[in-house]
Image (cartoon, rainbow, N blue to C red; front, side, top):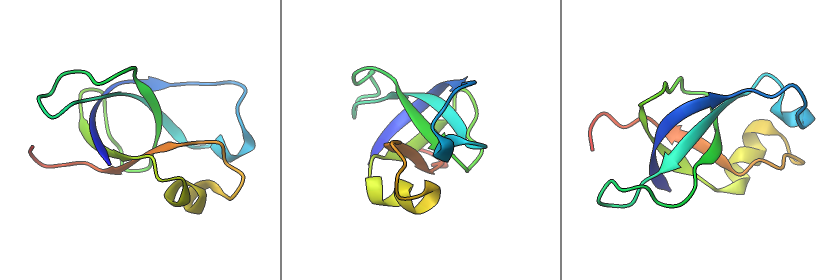
Length: 85
């Protein structure tokens, strides 16, 4: 799990079939001190996070495969929207 901040939404006209009708966010991962931690990642969101929202992400492939299907190439998904950090 890792904390991040939503910086944008992502749109694609051509995508893997398991990505159809899924909401994709561009999320900047954050270190413990709140500084950016690496490059932004694409994350699937079914919780309704908005630009500027802090989110808790997981890169657990099993969780995403359960949501999107066994053959999904996706990696990151929003697991929670924290009230306060």
